Length: 151
Image (cartoon, rainbow, N blue to C red; front, side, top):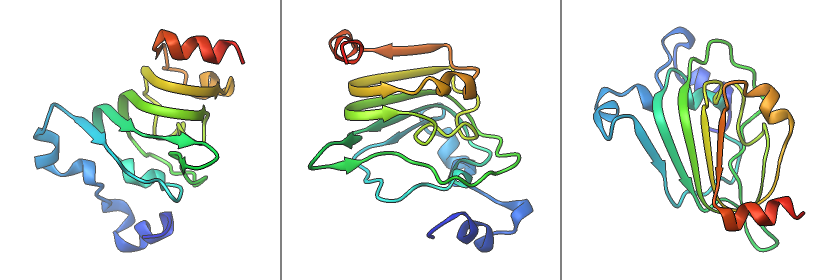
């Protein structure tokens, strides 16, 4: 699958099923999902999270450095009725990332309440707070927060 159109073509648009709708998966760890050691070489289609009911997502090892680029990005596709319910996103061991709406797609993370950042962050885009109106808590480890505010 290369893009959102491939996903739509592989399913009936009305009866689309994402991986997060599989009953067995929803029984594991109270709707906690971890993406550990993944490589994000291309943008992700927001349809991957259609009808997902996840309390928390954990992602590690995102980086935007001279020698490594592994950044979560979403395509610019506008998907009506995505119905994703992700309340908490934890990003661990991040290196020089920019937190913006390309990383935190407003359709996918519409219900995001808490964002936890553990690592070096270059910047947090101000429009993030406008587009993610339910985002009330952002956690930084103090050593990393100091580096962010001194940029």
